[in-house]
Length: 415
Image (cartoon, rainbow, N blue to C red; front, top):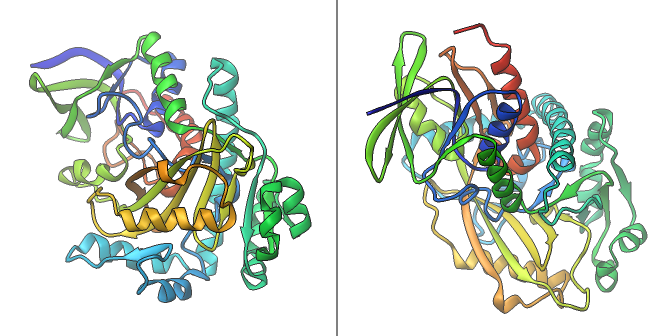
C-alpha cells in the first residue's frame, strides 16, 4: 500500500551524505523522510572511515603522477591501489574515464572544484557543530601530509600551490617543523623528507556525528525508515511518482515532491532502470582502529602518509588508520592481509602507539567517480536529485554537498 502522507523530500541513504542532506532540508522547513536498509544511520561507508575533514586531500587520485605509480603498484598485493580485473564493462569504463582525467588540465580543473566544495563544506559543518553542540571526538589541529622522499615532496608542490590559490591555507614544511607539530615523529624523523601542512583542517568520528545528527532530525519531525530497502523508482513522464521500498512488512511505496539519491556505491543499481547511468564504481577501502596507549605515544595531529595512501586520526580512545584502494567489484569481504599491511605501516612510524593486537578491522566500498568530483545536482527527472560519488572525501564534502543540494531543490521550478 502506498504511503499517502506525501513528503517534500525523501532521502535515500542514511550515511553522512544522506543525513546532512536531510538535516538541511529539515532546517529549511521541508517535510522529510529518510530510507535506509540498515537499523541505524552510518552503518556502512560512514561507519569506520578515516575520520578526516581534509581540504588538503582534495587533489584527485586522477593526476599526471598517478599512471606511472599505478604501473608500479599493479603487481603488488600490498600496494596502495590494487586492481583485480573483472568481466564487467562498468569497471573498464571507469578505468578509461580515470585515465582520461589524469591529464594536467583535467586534474587541475577537478582539484579547483573539489577544493571549492570542501571549503564550503567545512564552513557548513562548523555551522552544524555550533548549532547542535555535537560530540564526535572533533579536533581542529590541522593535518600533516608527510613524505618519505624529496622526489615525492617536490612532486606535490604544484598541487599545494593550487590548493593555496583556491583559498585553502597550505604550506610546505621541513622535518624540524613536522616534529614540532607532532612529537610522536621524533624517533623516526630521519625517515621523513618534509610535509604539506594545512592548519585549518579537522578530524572527527563520522559515525558518531551522523548518528547524533540523525537523532536530532528524528526529534524534529524527520521520519526514519530504517530496515527499509529502496528497490525501484516509479516514473511518470519527466518526474518520479514514488519510490518502491521493501521492509519486514513487505513492499510499499513512498510518495514525495522530490527524491534525493544518496546511496553511495548502490546508487547506479537503483538509477540504471530509469535510464540514468552514472560512471561510478566502488573502491574498496580498509581501516584499523587501534586502542591507544595511555602514555601519549600515538600521534595527536591528524596525518596523511601520501606514499602509502593512509590517513591517521586520533578519535577519542582509538587511533583510526584508513586507506588503500581495491578496484575489485562489489564485494565487501575483509582481506585480513591488507589490514595487517596497514598495521605494519603504523608500527613502522609509531611502534608504541597502542595495542595493535586488539585492533578492530573494517572494510567497505567508497563510491568514486573517475574525476573524484561527485554527482551533485539534478537529473533527467525534474524532481530526482543526485548526491553520490564522493570517493575518499565523503566525510569532508558531506555537509556542503547536502547544503548545496537542498539549495538546488528549494530553487527548483514548482512541481
